Each structure stands twice: as C-alpha cells, then as structure tokens.
Amino acid sequence: MSDLAARIESVQKRIKASANRAGRNPDSITLVAVTKKVSPNVAIEAIRAGAVDLGESRVQEAKVKAEAAIGEGYTPRWHMIGPLQTNKVKYLPGLFSLIHSIDRLELIRALSRRGELNGVTFEGLLQINIAGESQKSGCAPDECLDLLKEAVTAPNINITGLMTIPPNNVDPESARPLYKELLSIRMSIEKEGIEGLSLANISAGMSGDFEIAIEEGANIVRVGSAIFGDRS
Ligand SMILES: *Cc1c(COP(=O)(O)O)cnc(C)c1O
Image 1 (cartoon, rainbow, N blue to C red):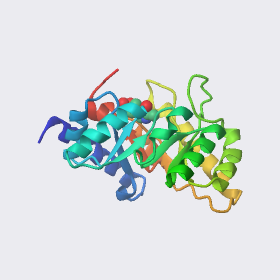
Image 2: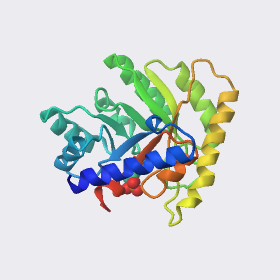
Image 3: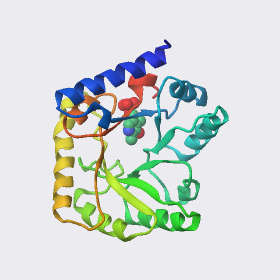
C-alpha cells in the first residue's frame, strides 16, 4: 500500500472511531480529501487509493485537476471549499458536486442565474463565520435566516446545509464550542419551519479537529494535511 493510501485509510479509521464514540453511523460521514496545492497526479493517486470526494479552494485549480482525472477515466465528486467570486460562477456548471462557501446574497443570485442559463441546479452549503473573524469569509450568524429565505425561493440553487471554518488554533478543543454553536444555529433555523428548506449537511472539521467536529454533529469533514502533508 502506498503512503498516501495508508494515510487515507488511517483518517477513515479515525472517522469511524469518532462516529462510533458519538453513537453515530460511520457511513453517514463523508470524507472530503482536500487536494488544494497538490499536483493533478497526486490527486489522481488519491482517487486510485479510494478517495471519492475531493475538495479544492480555487476554481481554476479544480478545473485542471478535474480534467486530468477525467483523462484517466475518473469522475470523483469535487467540492468547492474556498471563497467564491461571482465572476467565477460561470465556470461552475458541471464542475462541482457541492459548493461549501455560499455566504452572501449576491452569490446566491449569481448562482441561481447561472443555473437557469445552463439548466443545472447547484447544491451548496451556507458558510457561517461563527467566530466573527474579519479576515474570513462566511456570513454573520444573524444573517443566515434572511439568506436562506432568499435561497429557498431562488430557482436552480439548493442549500442543503451549513459550513464553518474555525480560527487557526493550536488547541483543537477550542473549536468545539463553535461547532456546538453551528448546530444550535441550525436548530433555531429549523424552528422557523421554512418551507422547502432542509439543512441535513454540516461541513465542519479539518485535519486538526475532525474528530471533535464529528462528535459535535458534522457529517462532512474536509481533511488536507493529514492526508497530503503540510503544503503551506
Ligand atoms: C485547506 C482547507 C481545509 C483542509 O485543511 P487541513 O488543515 O489541511 O486539513 C479544510 N477546509 C478549508 C475551507 C480549507 O481551505
């Protein structure tokens, strides 16, 4: 087994263990292997090693890797996890299975329009900036409800959950209260009973804290360096 395959397997085992600890079904948790900054060849090696969901933070980089993968006969699910400018939306149809970084009205409207033009429906998550860090993207918690109300009536876009990125921190435990907060935001939104809205997905947890995120309710974890090494 290659080193890469061994690291993917090790992360999968840790996901399973934390799901079991939390009394959750391990099969309900999706591992997104974050291939940003790795070469197309390494991304393809990860696919060969069993990765079926891959995350990228830049549209152009994702496109190059998706095309390389298609050239080898692979069509994994690509996830957009980085900040998204509206002028990039035209490249998205057919590229991503899930857009984790929807965070403002302008973007919701641009996706909806592009979806109508191309005859596709985008699936996405609402990114929330829970810690209120000024340099991070994501909407403020008190903006969520209005954005979701807009999204639910916009054609060709389907918001299926919430996503957050905690502050970079040496102590992974410091993310736990933020993940709890994310779940409580979901609960308060669900109480509103918005027709046609279901927030089944929670995208939270990275290499340093994905076990904590799973314990706190995440069903999608985005793991880069624990699989591919440090690329910064
Ligand atoms: C890079 C990135 C990750 C993966 O981070 P690691 O700490 O390397 O696992 C997860 N989510 C987002 C949004 C990222 O940009």
